Image (tube, rainbow, N blue to C red; front, top):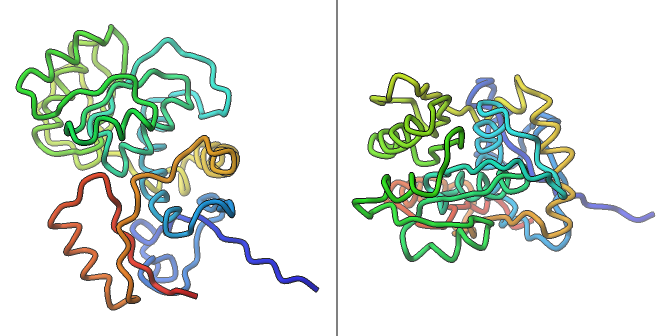
Length: 261
C-alpha cells in the first residue's frame, strides 16, 4: 500500500465566516472546497502559499466586479486593455496574470526596480508610479471603455485611478481597500472582497480555483509570485511577520512557516 500526500493550495475564510476553524494562524484549518486547489510537485509549498488571498482578491475584482471573461490557457483576445495599478504587489501580481489569461492587454504601474518583474508576469507596458506625469502618460496608451483596477487602494492611487477611468468613460473601479475618493461622477469605487469567489459567486470560484489554476500551475502558465519572504519558527513568529509586513516589503510576500513537517 502506498501513502499519497496531496499538497493543497487553499484560502482560509475566517475573516467573513467568523469561525475559528476557518482561521489561518493554526496548524490545521478547515477550508471551503471551492477555494482549494492541488499544488504540483514542481512548486514548493512555501511558494504556493503566496497565492490564495491575492488570487481570490484579484479574481473578485476582475471577474465579479468587472465581469471579464474567465481565465483560460488559450484565451480569446478581447481587444480591451486593463490598467492594474500596483502590479508588483501581491494582488497585482495575480491580477496581471489572470487578466492576460482572460484575453486582455495589461498595462501597470510599479517602481522602476520592478519593471522587469511585472513584465515577466505578462504586462505589456509599465509606468513609474512616482512619475509626476504618470496619469497623463497612462491615458495616452488607453482607449475609451478600457478598464482599471487599483491593487494598492491608498488615497492617492484611488484618486489617480478614478481620474483615469473617468476619462475612459467611467464604470466600476475595483479597489483593494474601502473606497475613499473623491471620484468623478461616472466612476463607482467598489471594494474587492477576496472571499466573494468562495462564498457568494461560486461560479467565479469554480472557474478560477477549480478549472484554471490547477492546470495553469501544472503547465507553468501561472507563476506563484511574488516570491515568498519566509520566516521560520512556527506560530510564535506570526507577529514578527505582521511587523515586517507593516514596515513594508516590495515584490515579496511574507510567509510564516507554521510547521516544517
